Image (cartoon, rainbow, N blue to C red; front, side, top):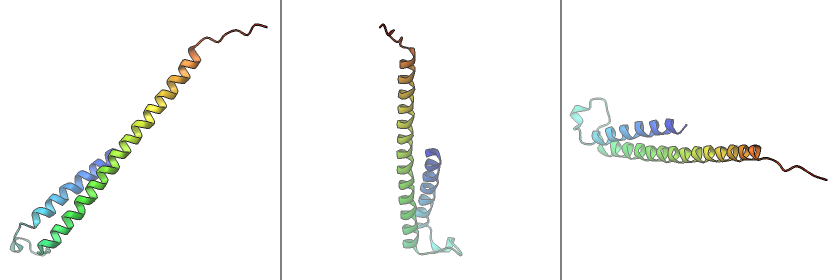
Length: 92
């Protein structure tokens, strides 16, 4: 699950860099595209913020998955340990 968020964050980061680069391209090279540099900066900023949010979600998701795996492994180890220890015989 976290891998998808990492890929989304990378794609958004790449497009944010492209949008930031568009602010330096003169308007004569962009027929049909918005020529306003501030618009490109705002788009780049919003995409970068979205990329950072996706990266944060991916990191947190990865951490929670790791905690789940470790607790499951500890639970299985405890069960295996209880099962393998010999039980004392009840003598009346």
